[in-house]
Image (tube, rainbow over all chains, first blue to last red; front, side, top):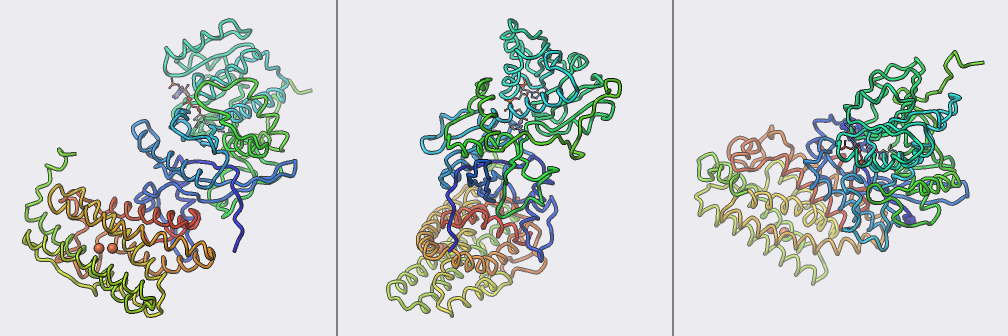
Length: 363
Length: 247
Ligand SMILES: NC(=O)c1ccc[n+]([C@@H]2O[C@H](COP(=O)([O-])OP(=O)(O)OC[C@H]3O[C@@H](n4cnc5c(N)ncnc54)[C@H](OP(=O)(O)O)[C@@H]3O)[C@@H](O)[C@H]2O)c1
Ligand SMILES: [Fe+2]
Ligand SMILES: [Fe+2]
């Protein structure tokens, strides 16, 4: 009998569109069974109770190996809205019980599942298993990404105005705090004006010049860097500076499809990391749903659990909303690099992308 | 909830016609269960297991009788047919394992697969019908749940003895039996008659009594998946089996 590996970490996730559900389900169907259409899958998919659908193994630079399990919530991609909150919370709760059954020591709530819970852990017993939203390492990769991009453009962060779309959110506020002492100006945007103003008031004493506006179009023309960490498919980026660097880290990541590139504008998918020493799945369905241009790429939120498992640092590392400290961002990033888990190469929906210096500043 | 239910006139001619088929399917299913346990009683050597199988057969008989009596009270002309397209195939699969004295296989087919569908569908019917018939479906669903739980413990022990062997075997049983139940519960109307419904396929008429075949199938597969979880079958295994069922 196959020896069952103990589980160090669990990742709870969901799909955000039907084509990816379709690829996964068809990837599970054996050759003799016809692939299913989305309509055929829609009928049953969200009835399936949350369950482990594959196991993972990650290798650290230190030689340590950790085992994980991916638990799919089977949340209906069409139901990722507040209207279905109760139903989705139930699914996430059930997924957490599955993770506890696997005796995983740390659980990462990927994508929407952390938003569903509003980071409120009080309803869970976290004495034997810790839970993290993974938003600290996600923030770290977003920040590392824009910093690297700016360096490559021979620019200095302290000369840049940074626009944060979704500034009052968990990741957005973490980025705002982090950058408040490092940039020339902060341009903050979210839809709820009162919340935005109250949030922005905290930064009036910092070295960066602060502006906030619920109207995105007022802020975009001033931005040298745009960090998008809002969950919205309908964000429009217009009248931007020619050489703007855009880090698209929200869901869905669709900004590059709306922007003309090539004029010095650089758009990349942010918050992503890569496990340099190996990240393997069993069964391996990656050929059916893995959409990244290089192997071993994953979301920062998932990798936070991987890094904590490598470290044997089992704690509710990121929890709640608005609690992410600048020191924690630096700390988790340092640990991440120690284990060979690093910022993913720049890419967007068209594939890997290189940042190139505008002609005028070359030579 | 109450508001919603008022909109169904369960005494209309169309509703009674759908209910006739619902009762016919339930009674046929119970008689299949009764016959399966009776066949098991014959096949098993262990005297305690033999006696238990007879007891089970009797409990399914009582369910069938209960449904029959209630149908009669409502004036429904039910049809019983153990040899119809789907029930007949399920029965034959079961008999093939009983002939081999394969107790584990018999339990898995009768108490996990068939029972998951029974419990789930009785529960859905029971919730939809806000009347005495509904109550009856719900109370029988409760008893069937106990059958499921009883077999779960047994199968869990089997799994622990030799996991790989057990999973291989269960996969075969799933392919043999769940494929038929999945075809039976397809959301499209049956093209050939199932041999139990009295007129056209009842599936598209279920909304008349507040039911729909899509959610009934979904709930049944959900309960089946949970049953596999309780036995200890890994999720990555069960999802693959379910993903390969006919749609
Ligand atoms: N590695 C990764 O790529 C990764 C990892 C984890 C999470 N994420 C994604 O990152 C995003 C942020 O996560 P979070 O936990 O920080 O979420 P959150 O706490 O819910 O914050 C969302 C923020 O976006 C704002 N917002 C929502 N819709 C907006 C719109 N149309 N225009 C402007 N602002 C809008 C919200 O404020 P208002 O409601 O007031 O507008 C809020 O400030 C999510 O999409 C999440 O899925 C990505
Ligand atoms: Fe029964
Ligand atoms: Fe039963």
